[in-house]
Length: 106
Image (cartoon, one colour):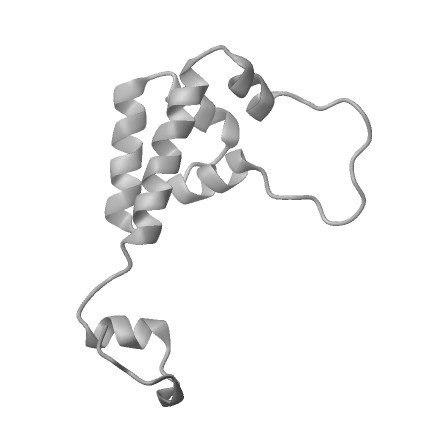
């Protein structure tokens, strides 16, 4: 952006401040992921079953992976996943929730 050499050892945040810019790619990714998630949850198809359903069999060893629904609820500032899934059924409410999350920059 500012032709800063790698030997300057400046953080990304500092470079963004000097360029008077902000991160936009991560915001776009989160917004598109949230809109696609809402689209999937409003339909009663295979993708919905995969995200909300339980898998048969045993869990894998090691640390449990973070679920898509948990990350989405955290990004949107929702208290529980169940409340978030209920909001996806109401399209206008879901869009308002995404817009608020984008404004807050969480």
